[in-house]
Image (tube, rainbow, N blue to C red; front, top):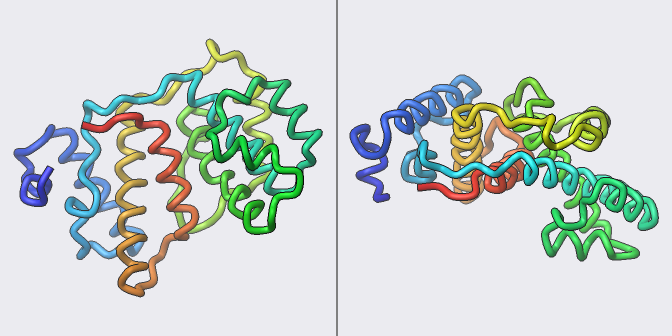
Length: 215
């Protein structure tokens, strides 16, 4: 999609255009500059996007939870116990698996892993276990995220879980992708933004896992 096409409301689906218009208004309400060309920085999320299934989202939620807990000092034995009990191993990425199995991670590795609570929160929201995905200016409460994950995603059977309506997931993805694009642009220009860049980054990664393909 070219920049000329991206700003043309007749190109792509009408729903994608309406979605992007709402995203722009939402971000401007929170003080995010409306002057940046969002359609150029991040193409609108189309309605033809493919969304991950419930089992995959649940698995990624658990994997993010374990990864974040390991980043906060969970021992290797405790990590194994959690991953075994809830059958999480197949849902780790290669880099996550390597980190999980590292006996003595560096401080930088642990800090990076602890940010996974933000990614976890998005997956819990996608599963309907979190009511609202707030503006990305503050960090999630890790204790609440853990409790929600254990009481919901970890202990509820997969067939008893369901995803939010696809439209809500795509709307959330559009906000996340635009927020990430704005954060990158602001960083390159040396500008301050009202969002927390790390929160924005993790949310974008989470939605990239949820939305497996975009038209």
